[in-house]
Length: 298
Length: 298
Image 1: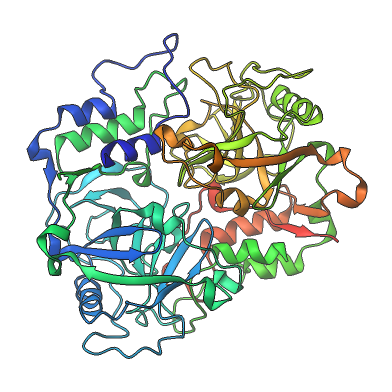
Image 2 (image 1 turned 90 degrees about the vertical axis):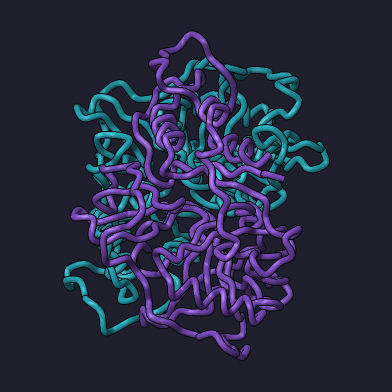
């Protein structure tokens, strides 16, 4: 079950310990929070905002964020709908950094209706309409970081600018020297969060499920991590918008609402680590250290 | 050349841009800093503090930190010298988290002179003798973070406690419920920095070269990332102390001194990102975002 897998990833190495400082009973553990969550704490992602990437390693589900990058979401869906990505590849995979997918031949494949390059949407230049759930007001890269509509977000001190941050699993548009040059080549963060890229490229989604399949792609050891031999490219079998698939093939999953009380409790649990194994409780968590749980509803 | 590889890993996706805000000329780029560095800016690691891990994926070089965890360094060298690890395996590899190596059969392999469990050395409880080069005084997990003798270090506000932090490549001792239960099973951080583990386990070294070979190990999908089938274990061919090898087989590399002016410049360059590609310069870097360059001297 996916919920369990995600939690295990962030659990400590080994098991319980009884002789150490305990935290107040009011801080439940992540598993207790999940067990006590109600149906209202969960949402079913809109199939219009889900991309399904079929790779040789497995299926990857990306949730898109039109609230932050309407143009990028619209264009990647148009590309998916004209089956542009089918037969292209992840041809640049840098260990501990990003996997980049698109046309390895340098944008030779014709594009029909979509655009090859679109204006950057580096940040949202207005107050948010949706709830901002604070994770960290000591963040080094931004005044505050937190979650908005399921996505990790950083924002300026006055709250007038906000942007999706580069946490592991971030789905973003690659670009050339010109900030407005991206449109048809994307990347996914597979390693330590490269937060220094925030607002330098447009992040417009995040991996909900299957990040491990992106992390299993063959690495490149040419300049900048480009794969040197074509045979080593990681083929993209297809990229589809979930809403276009038969209902039986659409992902049946739910994500914890990041504006729910349960998620606020999860943030506290991630900062305070109430599990018995811990000896020193950090008392702090950064925005990339809290991942909204995903569960199967099949 | 290793220096180049390390820098490329942290370089942006694509190339130069001329029409954007520039930074003051006084901030040189990492490549300029390297080009202008002098011999005094580099050190040759002590072969007595280097572990050589031979894996099927490649050779991994770990530098040990006796300054922070004398007992752990002593014990792992004793284990290596009695060839304890040869034929054991990385049997727990969690995507985006850690690779754990030791005896998959649960500490069945006999240990001759070394210890199976040793007292934890979670932090150094005294002022540092060596130079602390500040990276971040806004760190969320500690009062300050920086580099000491080549290792990423966090410390308390009064400077009386300091500890090696869990950055990617951290080399640490796994443990059971009891903080003093570790001794012969280690782990290496392969994904996003799990800083919440700081001071919960003893970090006593870092990977200098070959982290990519650890990151290429087969993952486990059993509970807590344990590999379920023995055939899928990642064998450890051998672990040796470099000083015990013939000189011709010892690593011929140098590491930039973290108490050098060149490294201080590198920290500034990592925070300010003077490269033309950048549109928004972060003005901040965390301790895991600066890696001391390593160069071959063969």
